[in-house]
Length: 233
Length: 293
Image (tube, rainbow over all chains, first blue to last red; front, top):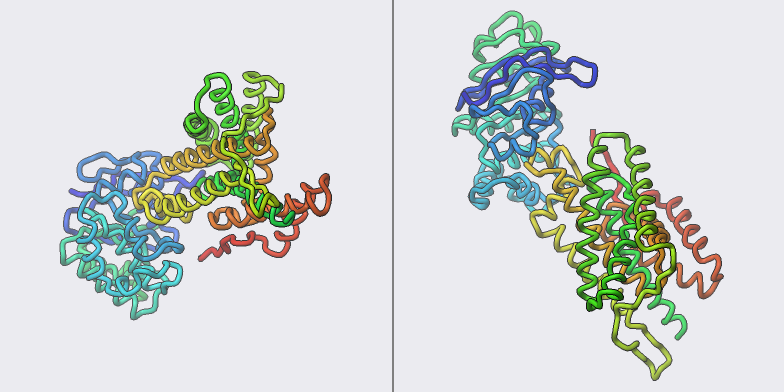
């Protein structure tokens, strides 16, 4: 098992945001977390990547307890988190953004760069441009490319489709599909439940800080409850 | 010729302001705090070099190096003990702490070196340049400070633009959380920033006291405040802005003193600051803060 989240409770000050979430991700799997706004999806990812810490419960990554590990140390363990809102470095060039992605990488920088440029040819065209001049779709590509620079053991994507035109959403998902085929383990958070369930091996439904349903992507896509709540009937 | 002489003196004073201002700007950019103890680190640097030169008979360049080492350690220790525990506290708490550290350093200097004014021996040993058949005299200190400023600026531009650590500093300055997700240690980056800023403060202290050879425990506070002004004037957080702000401030001060009033020169400097901030609130080369939602 690559990632095991066991009964974590996370607070924002006095607000109890995550109320005992447990789930797991196996190597090579694509797992989706779906749910409405405020269900705790992003908080769960932030807690895994060490930006936040749970009050109780534990998180294991590659059989190592990472519950209280700081975010910057987790990157060299092979955990990559593409945050909601992308958070690329707007004043740095595309190339520099990718260099930052490889900050802890001891692997071959040029090979990783080539790999990212093969996945996202647009980034190669724009490698000298600063991040702030990129379109939303290109910024998403850069955020994903930057995370892939460490060849992560687990890639966590937080709302990769947010704010993008349908054609770009299609494009981003087709890249996620390629990554999945190539064997990358992916933990995907999405509000676009239809697309997420379509791509995922397994999925968990989060509601107000709790896992309320889980199953294979297909099972959930056909569940009446999910259909009603997240797939528009 | 008097004009040219004033201009050169202004550039020289401005160079020292710019070197000090870099410490304010870098720390502000990366740790998002105003380190008001920075001026006092300058003073400590000046005292350390003074003691090593006068009572240990150390050559000036080695004295400068020793002062830089002491200030680097001091800066890192201050950050570690006083500022780091307040990393997630409101910025006002950090600001007050910085003022506290400033007084602590001044009083420590008072205790160690007493309030007696020390006459600082210039570290510049070569003769002044006489140009235009003696019509224009340029002091050695003037040349050294301008050259030092140029070297520091080029060095720092190279460091932040080309090295891995320098780029990581820019990343932390722009987006701390994203930098952390790249595996960059924010604490380590802030430590490096304080180390660089404090080493520069030592250089500035030695240069400033070589130009104005009066050393007391409060020597650092006025150039510190003026350099802070220079940083704001140029656009705090921006390295080229710091250079522009520093040089401009030095020139305004010297010209104000020469052509308007000796007594009002400081007031003129700050009046200019107010006018510029009214017109350009982010400073001359400051980055526009556009928050994307």
